[in-house]
Image (tube, rainbow, N blue to C red):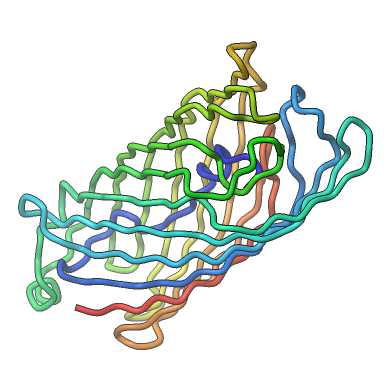
Length: 290
């Protein structure tokens, strides 16, 4: 909410490039609770800062055929509320914020190991050991933003993240995922106090996952991500501190029925130079139909 770049790079998404039948639609609602410290760049006059944040995201996705291979399009819009406290130029201060966040959309295409198959053909097919694909995530500046205020929900800029990933499955139980990409950002033309222009350098990231299928529709995963770079420049001035942050987490997916599931997740900032050193817990419900 407060530093959009690290928030965007903290995604921990196991089995993002796994095979699925085409023609499937799903709707989801997810709740996240985050709390912890925020390490601002030294050029920002805020120290000893902490935040308690909540967010609910509504999402929709659909799988389809694209050139004979499986593709997936998803979109999500969050609503965020929470509180922030810290010292602004050595003066204790606290604020609360609530409002719509930045919309996120993603298109992924599995280029290897995931042909476009309907539900019946997919169920009969022998699973491929290796699935590889590419994706593009777009973040749109739909979030609440007050240019005259330093603490905002929305980032007031566009973000684009191309990524490539690979998934390896063995014994039909274990999955190992590895993906890498980078966020590219447009400038925020009205950064605090409303008259500044802030530009951020590209923010590369890597993430890896190891997951195990517990039952037919249930599985668990261990996750990790590392992102670096992303220096910021205000009004063409010198670069801010370079990021070098790591985050780890775990996820449990439980299939309630053939069409319904829930996911419970937990993650924390194992190492943070600039950005959110948050402990985050979440729960999501998903409904699937063809």
